[in-house]
Length: 203
Image (cartoon, rainbow, N blue to C red; front, side, top):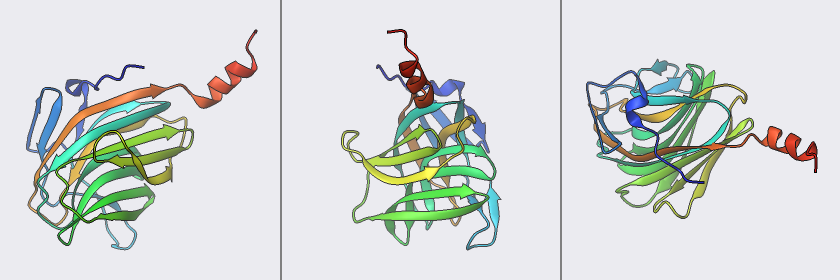
């Protein structure tokens, strides 16, 4: 199946940043200072004000994007986000913590959790991929868009539309430049329907 990039000029902003451009179907944005997505747990506060450029999908899909950014300050982050509403979302990408790069995933269902995979080198770019199947999403990372490694499997309500897109956050900092290339979404046939059709074929 041929995969084509999602047309960025058809996508929508949530918390549009002051500075952003689209060129050759790639998004560049200056991430809004003092912005983030987080709910309650550990830190005791809720924020929902970082830039998120998205489209909407139902059913099952695969989405991926190439990310590069000029991370500067603790907790600067850029990645993919899948969002149902303000209490249910998952963001996954690179997060800069104490001078080190981390593959970071935050899963939020009323309250947020946070998992990281430390990376022992500077990362000029990273590919992040998410596959939604039934009531789960699998997140993967790659340094070359060929070999992908799983970073998280998380629950997400199925049979519900999802907002899918690119996000950046700079909760402690004054913002930074983030770039997103080759954003693409591939429709995946619904597993339950495919099984039903196979079991009820006329052959």
